[in-house]
Every structure is written in C-alpha cells, then in structure tokens.
Image (cartoon, rainbow, N blue to C red):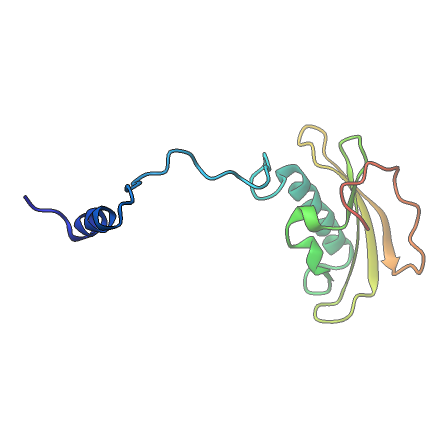
Length: 142
C-alpha cells in the first residue's frame, strides 16, 4: 500500500501523539462584520465618483485640478452626508495637481440611474467656516 508523503506524515504524527486528525473544517470561520455590498457600497461609490468628476470638470479637468485623496479611496471613507432622501452631499478640497488645496467643492448627487442628478452647491475658495450641512442621518462626516 502506498501513501502520499504528506498524508502518511499526518497519520503517523496523529497516531504517535494520540490526536485525531481533522482533515476538513465543517463550518466556515465566523465573519467579524457583515457588509451586504462586499468591499464598498456601490451606490455610494457611484455618487462619490460623480461628485468628484463634476468638480474636475468645473475646475478645468485633471490637468488643472485634483480632488483630495479621500475622493479616490473607499467611498465609505469619503467626506459625505446621507441626506436621507436617496441623495448624498460631498464636501471636499482640491486644487492644482501636486499643490496644496485651494478649492472647496460641495456637490449633491442622486446616484439613482433612473433619476440621476448632480448639483454643484459650492465650488470656490476654501471657506473658513463650513456652510450649514443637510439635516442629520449622517453616515459620514465632513
């Protein structure tokens, strides 16, 4: 009778130590958190991308303007407010590529493909005091 070396080693080790071999796990390990969207919420990601792209167009394109890094990473970590009516408002900084930010953009987006809406609420110099934000229901923060 011939055994593959790994199988034979496992059986021999278990026999010598008195431990019964468990060759397969019967249940998957428990997940620490459950996210029904997988890596990131695709609706929020679409809204974040539309808001960033609107600011890029309004400020002369990518050769003249870059939004802050949070507008490129996971959408759930971007500076947004869930307005509670299906829209999201993003408030972020940007400016010339590789330069400190000089422009503040506030963009409200409805990412529903059947009724899309992108509205630039503010696009100008960075404001010293933040403008009033939409009512609570915050999932993100400014």
